Image (tube, rainbow, N blue to C red; front, top):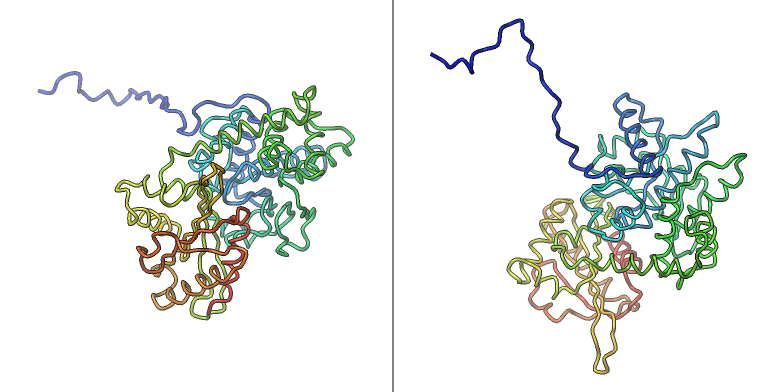
Length: 440
């Protein structure tokens, strides 16, 4: 006979089911302050509208896919401004900052984590919208939303090409995208956030009545400008003037501008360097930029090209792998690019060495890898690899030399070193993209 404790309840008795006490995995500690509250509420409204089929009301403010502090601050600033500056008009704007990286990748940039913490945002980044939280794929969503605003990059990724480009703010080369965008601002400044904050302040001060500007957002803006301008040491006049205007509105208004910006740059730079604990996969993806590139070839009209930037030499990275061997680094890299569907990948490494006099010199490395299992076959991989290899070796600004273990590399793999301190991704990427676009 079954025990009484297992007896079924009478039919007329309703079982009481209590809600789970589990908390959202990302919402570890809710942020405090107006800015966090607005950002969290804005994300909620965006997802509610998507559920109701009202995505056409929304504008995405998008930084670049590397997700650095400049992109993040610029996107959040312009989204906040668009909503608040139009809130009391006949045509209020619904805008949200979309960080084009995954939620967990945000913490691969410790300076982002620190800046968000200092701005009293929620831990776990639950009040931010990241790429992996989109309820639809970008290709579909781009045709539904009202449009996109690009900050800190000059052209949309291929997956967002279905969306109208409403505005652009960038401090890189103008690629001609969005010719009818307004505002459309390109200028050589240290930080893209400078351009966004300048426009925001100009429009804010022209309003009949100013909206509330939270000190947390102002401090985020100053942090972005500080880290990109090295505490204003490499600032343009425009960076400096905007930083001064922002400082006067912040809780730091009594402080000296240079002192405050040097302090911000110092703590954010220290945080940015704190990446020694990251494994190879995380180092590859923490500063990853990739997109489709068109080629003249009718057989393979587009290929996927991706770039990573890593602050360690390849030798140092190899020692971080499980087996501390060359093959292991390339195996980890191949697993990452298989996941991203990349045909040709480039790792841009940098490190410093001391000469015989004790002086430090920056050494850069270029790691080129082509794979034949995504969009191209083996014969095409041979041709593409040789095309890009020749372009890199022929460039006089790089003046590359084969890496000391280049003879150990496998098929479609090459590593070079060079000593052009200024030749980071902004220099190398156009050289390789040009070669890919001419490959047939």
